Length: 495
Ligand SMILES: Cc1cc2nc3c(=O)[nH]c(=O)nc-3n(C[C@H](O)[C@H](O)[C@H](O)COP(=O)(O)OP(=O)(O)OC[C@H]3O[C@@H](n4cnc5c(N)ncnc54)[C@H](O)[C@@H]3O)c2cc1C
Ligand code: FES
Ligand code: FES
Image 1 (spheres, rainbow, N blue to C red):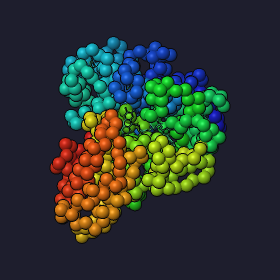
Image 2 (image 1 turned 45 degrees about the horizontal axis):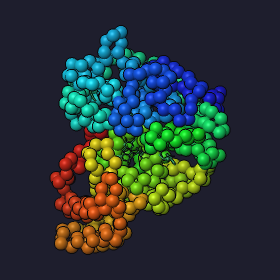
Image 3 (image 1 turned 30 degrees about the horizontal axis):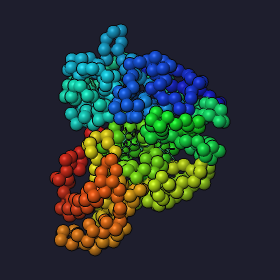
Image 4 (image 1 turned 45 degrees about the vertical axis):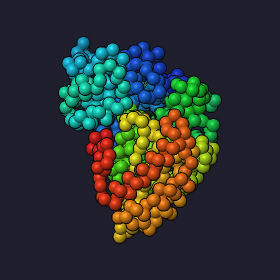
């Protein structure tokens, strides 16, 4: 019988099984690789998930298939790689022969100072194993989390287009079947607990064990992908003595689709939730494509994006406008509430001690409902929103029967716009001359602040313009002809 609790971290390093009994809860994967293993090919740049120099590939079996995703080792906690195959740039060359993506980087002059190169190679390595022949846009989306200051991206993208054929032929593909077996063997169903009651890294194997452990240690920090928490450690230099990781709990990351709704488990990463959320509306896909980077989306969770309570998180305004319901779990007690009611004030959410965000259920659009969402940020890729507007209009015979609107970046929390929604009800979509009162109502709904991302005046002007844009697009049935990238820009490329 499998042991109920395991006190060692188990993972594969380039297909070879490793066990570690001494794991500090705050230790990052990058520190492990560079300081303990001395695998120094992987670089430390920003140490906050932005530059991609530390990118490594993590392999896991999903839906019966071994898949590799690039992740930022600098903010990924070591304990969270339990059960994964960890591959770094130091592992790629064989008998002095470069890997095909490395060789293409040489052939196309994709490297100058070389600092970004290991990270870029690892993102391209994961793309090499994605089983697709990418086009230029796909390559650009995959590389959005890898910053290169020297070459410009043209030679790097050309290297990718030449090397990635959709039919991988390298050492990893030859030992694929063995790796799948080795990954399966590591799934022992045991709760992972390393440390003492005062200082530990834990990753329970079931949702019940996760909820029970958190109820016993409500002072612990829950970690999904650590794309926020990792920075508390690397940038704020905080010591977090108790960490509970949600990512191993069976069922906790499940994504369930029905004809009426999509249910995203509290541990589901953006990558895992992508297809289901994108299926609700192309604008959800477009916002997700611009949320962080491939690396951030491979680790970060929708549950973490809600639980952190940020006023500028990208998913909450969209999910609120879509009418999402949040599920919370404490021990064995579950409760649900409308997502908008979860956000009480800046930094304060309706979540009790020891209570988990266990799922969010998002209704699909009903007939007559139209959705639009726009993310406004200084950079197109990998940037935090200055504001994000999300709009769901129910239209009957050319008139707005009901409007649900939510903005991020306009208040201390993600927030609905009740005055604007009321002003919109009954308006004829075909008559823009009647829209002005709704634009004015936005000033009753929001008092935005000025900060480094945008001034209050800019935010209010843009909010009005986004509402106009949504009304215009829905009225004319336009698929985004006024946009830099069309409404379906992300549809196929950024999975
Ligand atoms: C480079 C970079 C770019 C980013 N870009 C964006 C962006 O464009 N848009 C955006 O919205 N965000 C962005 N983020 C922020 C971050 O990726 C998201 O907020 C992410 O969704 C957090 O999820 P996580 O699983 O990584 O959370 P974690 O860091 O693991 O946790 C975040 C918080 O939520 C709590 N928590 C986690 N899971 C649960 C749960 N199930 N129940 C209760 N509490 C929980 C944690 O205790 C912590 O307080 C970016 C981050 C980085 C590093
Ligand atoms: S060091 Fe910059 S993303 Fe990790
Ligand atoms: S080659 Fe110098 S940063 Fe990319």
